[in-house]
Image (tube, rainbow, N blue to C red):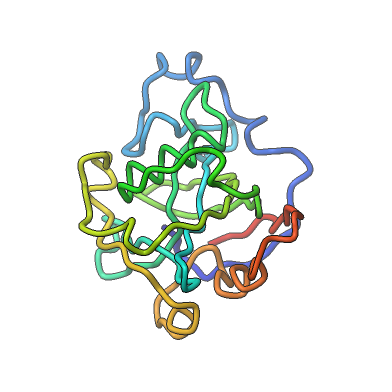
Length: 209
């Protein structure tokens, strides 16, 4: 969902959320773009949302990732972690559990998730829009057998348009892929969580992707 390779920047002192009007006060509360209702346009012109993501590992330290593309760039795709937008009234942990179930069919409970292990912000172009997303990332262990045939029943219309596949990746194989992977340096980030998370939430800052 990006135009360029990620470039780290210093994290902003104030969250982009502060520039975003409440959903009820903007355009009657409905979206005026092709993305979901959790995206709100801020005074800076960027669409903004908060998101929860999960680094899903199996018993062999493989990570379950999604490959997707932008409808405006169908020949370009990238791998990214499971997760998505936080709904109104939802906390990041609950959103993470819900997104895992909707996107993969894997049912977790809040106690299955560790973290948050990382937070990050990203600015990118997607769906012909300039976007900013603030992400909270968790870690969870699941057996490889918990993910089998892809069930698209819980996918949004946008996900049906842009998600191409889901698969397990060994860290060595993922390190050799020739397309982009997000977050940047995901292999190193995951290796830093092994064999167990040390309990420190690491803030990865703001990147332009």
